[in-house]
Length: 283
Image (cartoon, rainbow, N blue to C red; front, side):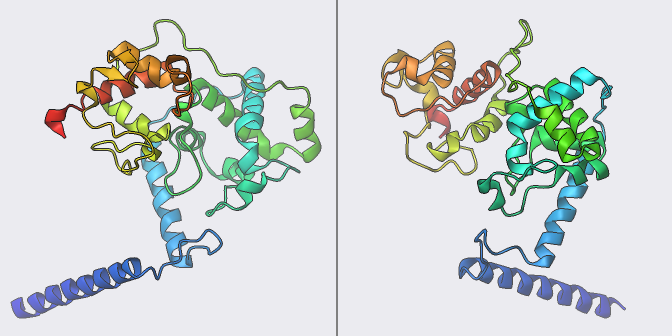
């Protein structure tokens, strides 16, 4: 019995090793087609879809939805949907923009999503985004109340005909960002700042110690940022000045290649807090 168990364990280990080698070969030799014109295999698509569904269900379990029936909330959600969502997801009688048609995986038809997913899951997906898709984390662009407004609108979206959608859309001004209420800002959080660096595309230009994917050298490396006497060579390196640089680079240094990517005041605090942990002693 013991010998049979040992043989079975060795067989499973050998099979796992062979599978790992095969997977490594597929990656190393470039056999897996990563082009967006070639869809994932059925097995890969099913695996990713199942992983997403189970992950969202687990993480949205504690999300409590507010009252979503108010007409003002639904109306504001319609404005936000028109401003931020219809370009990729479309609407009744409205196709997504051309760039969205080439995304792989394709953006979900939210009429179906609203029918099949609970409000808490839609909120979580909208707030946090989904890896390996084009779905961004809207928590860096919208407040939680605004995201709930979008969820409220999505609950009525399946009931709208193309004419109904156009009637709701006509005459609505574009949605404007909600200003941060006084006193709602907290002190900077380095862990939150490390996450925000991904969301504002800092990783596409800078090598940043400890941040996944940040090994680009379009701009200077941010290693040792806490020990630098100046920011961009023109401003004393203090937390307040670093926050201003993150939010208004063009106002600090005319002609800088550093773009204004709309960093919020809270996110600037968090990012500055993280950058101030990058000392030369911890490279």
